[in-house]
Structure formats: C-alpha cells, structure tokens
Length: 240
Image (cartoon, rainbow, N blue to C red; front, side, top):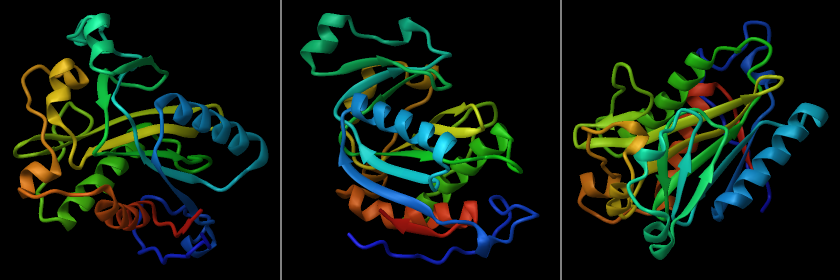
C-alpha cells in the first residue's frame, strides 16, 4: 500500500519547543490485523532496537490478538482466576511481560495499539505520556458519542458503563516506548471474568459495541483513533 500522508492538527503535547510541528517526522501507522502475542512482542523488540540504533521513524502498531492473558510487572498471580488446565481448555495463552500494570486480557474484537516512540529529548515524562494515551482514547470514544473519562488513582479510560480501555507501557533505554493500550471495541466480555482486570475488583468492564447497542468493527474505529493520535501528539502519520 502506498503511504498516505495525513495532516495533523496542532496541539501542545507532542511538539518540542525547539522543533516546530511541521519539521517533526511522520509516525508510521501499521495496521497488522490479527497477530499472535508472541509475534507482536518480537516485532516490538525489533523495532525498539532499530529505533535505538538506526533512528527509524516512530511507529504505531494497530492490531488484535487471539485470546491471551498478560501479566505485567505489578501483577499478582491470584488475579488470574483460572487454573492452567482451565485456561488452556479455553484456548487462552499466558505471557509474563515487561510492561507496567497488572493482569489484563486481550482477544478478538479488541483494538490494541503499540506506539514505538522516542520521548527524548523534550518529552521524557512517563506520567504525561500515559495521560496523552488516555486522551487519544477519550477523543476516539467521543467521536462515537461515548462519554469517557479518567479515574483518579488509576491508569486507563472509563465510560459510565465500566472500564473500556486499559494502558500498560514500557520505556526502554533512550526513552523508547513499547506496549501501549487496548480498547474494547466488540470483544466477548465474558473472557474478562477469567481475571481481575488490571487488579481492580469492583469495577465492571464495558465495550463500545455494548454501549452503542450495535456491532462495531476495528476497521470502523481505526481512522478516528489515528486522527486522535495525530491531534494529541501533534504529528502527521503515514500508512506503512
């Protein structure tokens, strides 16, 4: 597919005070379809290394996973509510990964985004980066008329019906980001009962399709999400 340049609206987060927005290189958006979790880990590791050594353009990987439970660096194993036998019988893989956060679930119907970005030299602020990812998701949901907010003391995005997006990131040497966010577009929410999502016992999980009372595809959500990413990070994008 020939790269298509998209113009970014100007806002403050992503623009360096020493580098005007129009001189920032575009972020390459890769729409990968359904990818195994292991393959996505390998691809992220490769891109982080290439970002550190070759200075490749920033990347935004957009994809969905087969059923998988991931265990972050702050996870408790008792937040997985299935035995290994039960989990395997349901076709759910398990991975321990080097991102922040607790236990989470990924599966079909969930839009996963892995930004491989350099936060150096002027944006080396993890808290600010997390809030920016939340803002991307809040704006995306707003495009569909879904009111979404942050919750004090938590990372992620909530609709009135429940938590609708999770975030867990890693920052490697050189302030290169990996891992990222997952947005519940139209997944089977029953799979979230296999874990304590993000270690939060008393909050329900919601999906865009459930709130809108209609089926919803990832292909329908990707364009407004990319536009929101452009606005929040003050960057252009190209489709790789």
